[in-house]
Image (spheres, rainbow, N blue to C red):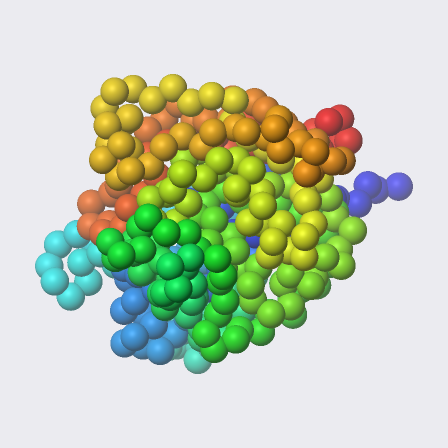
Amino acid sequence: MKKTKKKVVVIGGGTGTYTLLLGLKALPIDISVIVTMTDSGGSNRVIRDEFGLLPTSDLRQALVALASDEVDDLFRKLFTYRYHQGTGINGMTFGNLFMLALTDILGSQKEALNQTARLLGVTGNILPVTYDNSQLLARYDNGKQVLGEHFIDEPHDDFINHHIIDLETIPKAEANQEAVKAIKDADILVFAPGDLYTSILSCVVVNGISQAIQATRAKKVFIVNLMTKHGQTHDFKASDFCLELSKYIGGMNPDYILINKKIKLNKSIAKRYADEKSSIVEDDLESYKDNIFGTTIVRKNFTSSEIFETPKGDKLKRSLVRHDPRKLARVIQQIIQEKI
């Protein structure tokens, strides 16, 4: 009898999800990725404000990550190419413009996504968390609030020393039912590394997603970020990331927490992170373990040896140090095989 592939569902967006998918696609699994749809910065601002469409950057990254190995590498480079000259399309990626044009031709952003996936030979399902046009609204401990993912990611100085205490979508977004079904049917549910509020929790706060997470029997895996982010998770320790996730998924704890053992930053990279007021996430889970009884903590060296520079034309801040996709995939495979 042919073995049924395990269903692995990833929740997130951005470079963290892209990195994880690169590793997972090599495994003999059925992959689905539920992608955040609240991005409002960079080229996505143009797509939303001038064309009235949903943001495509996180979808594009997932498409490229899951593109067939048989697809010419030139196509991957083309879809990630960012224009860096002129004024009209400076900062835009070819992939975003391609999907924009395809939406106009086909009359449907959903169909444009499906056809782009077909052209790239994508293995797996890429599911927008919602098709509703919503913005993120964050409320802070100083009583103020910020509307728009971009302004949460890179807040005004009035907010950078304060923490987010509540997150929601405005207007309230309803979950894509395909995403809800994927979560409920999953064997493994992975919360990818990435900006906690604007990549991970931006999915969870969509109406119907948290409820599906609470209803699923899937084993839940949380990959803790390598670095804090100034203005969003500054001064956060590993337990703070876990507490925030638990808060938004109904008080549940993940079955597995993957945390990096240690990062050694060279002087140049350390200075750049210090200038951004970011720091290595401190592993305080031993002192917190009474609150996560039953959770398995996996400590390994998950970091990539490669340093990632921001490409020309990219106006947003990107992580320099990232997880290694193969190291993450190896542990996810062990979890699937119940060897951890």
